[in-house]
Length: 228
Ligand SMILES: [Zn+2]
Image (cartoon, rainbow, N blue to C red; front, side):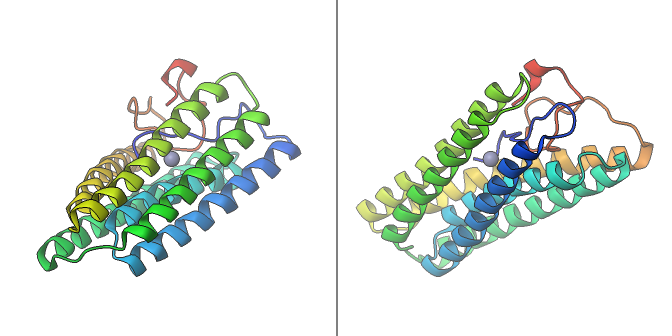
């Protein structure tokens, strides 16, 4: 789910080994974003599209950790703004598509939803195990755990929606799950965008709003207990 992840917690420059893990995580999450979005378009499932937004967000975090973590604040803020606006756009796209599905009464393909949701769960669990095994720094365990738990809940929600679609032969379970996830994505996007705009304007980093998680991919700005 899009509510809270910060999957890239390193204190200082990442070691070559950890950079390889970040690369693997970037490829897995970027690939799953593409696959889940295409499966969503093909099957007519808006929940799959909404779940894809989280892979996009996480992939962006890994990219930020790999490429702009050491860069100037302006560059980091710009990357965060790009991420916030993209997530907001995906969230709005999902909301509009949900409305269109509701109006047309389109029934998504439950089978595709089920197996893609299961694949997404496997990708998230795999990424979590990898990050956990090669973790660096104290804050990692907790943030990896929280991130993975929320993402897994999102994947399970997609699979439950698939069951619901199959059982009711309507699109409503798919739409309900999609709207909840779209809302989470849009509210996270709003916080990220507002924060990064503030940084770009003032050139200073404030404490990030508690709990939005999908902000920057780094954790230098607030104490470990705030990591989600
Ligand atoms: Zn996530």
